Image 1 (cartoon, one colour):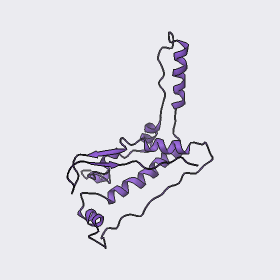
Image 2 (cartoon, rainbow, N blue to C red):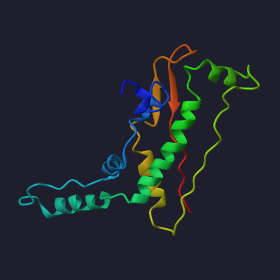
Image 3 (cartoon, helix red, strand yellow):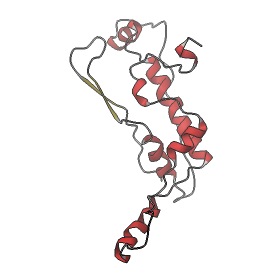
Image 4 (tube, one colour):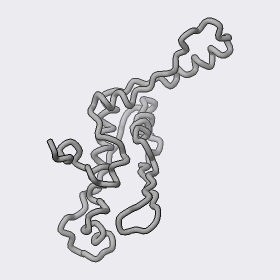
Length: 163
């Protein structure tokens, strides 16, 4: 297994490297789980402070299998698109600059996804939790192929409130 592309088909692409690793379903479950802080010794904590600790129960979250599938869907939309826009490939710059009207490697089709369900069932929360599982929303590159100076790339995906 000396080929890095076997375990990561996006290896070497500076656009995908800061999205974090490709995660298995069990790693996703662990990443998306949020357990509130539980004080070890409740004795001696004043009741008015305990109430504030109790409020952290609102952050408790165990992801469903559907939330994991949603994360996988987002991954399958973002990473392949970044693979097609790999700035280390001359073909990418030829397409972006308009030099090549008939690219040998066309860009992949646009992707879209929809989440449906009854109001209040956690659609927006699931989307936001999936997006927040990425280490960074804005990626700062101190060097970038074909460009001089720093470059900031936004990885944020518009996740408006679901209706």
